[in-house]
Length: 347
Image (tube, rainbow, N blue to C red; front, side, top):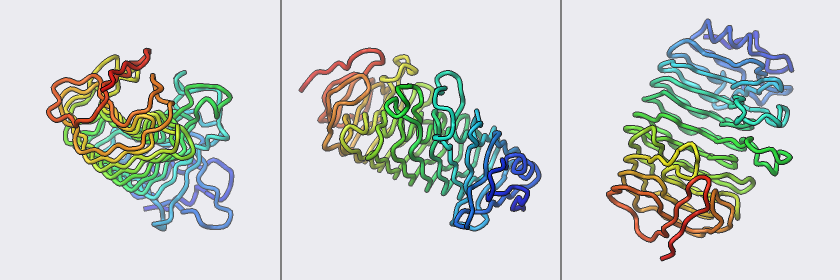
């Protein structure tokens, strides 16, 4: 175990070399938390890369959290875990330091300015905060299984063009999950992320529940995006999404037809039930679902006109679906195909 004293969170000198040495040498790395005079956080100028299976990265005085801050010149992720098993990251804040980093190089040009990237199996992420990402995502998970992410905060990531002198491509997700096999994402809070707050492609025995998403200061394209052609299965339940006027395009969207990356593909076999959505332009949309079930969701008080590929508010819409076993009634027929205006059939 180490508290990594060679790294100093009370000055403006980069700490990544010292932290990497500690991560290379110890299974338990406990960092000094905030709350002390002069504390600025651990400055990260080069990506941290844990390499020890079963490693613990946490605070030395929980529940207080240690803070990592991206250095202005960092051109990559703050932390990247690649293929490790059974690690834990807890009680850490990841501050992407968006306001002090380049604004004119959006992630769509190939820059990787996410905060955290994770791949592995059997890991735990808990009581973490990730915010201020320049673009891309506050945290991504891919090529992973049997993990859990809970009681964490993902907020205020990326920029819309109106915040970035008209530059597009600087938006960011809160949590982006490409692979959720045998995994759980629960009891997390998301707010004011500028792309998708919580995007989960799905996967066998994937459970996503009791997450809270809100937009009352910044616009986002969607609160929750469920499913992707690359994965099959998943249950999404008891999630709560709320928004102010014109601050969230989709509350929950099942399928990903509005995004060109889907190329018209379908999510498969997801179950979405007992969720509650209020205040988005389109509270609940299904567009691109093959199999699965949609039931017992509550959608109320849609408002505004800022939604991807459309400008008409609605509580519940359904577009492209195939063999959905239980499809909750009360919808308007509407599609949101990328690159075209929405097509709607009114009841």
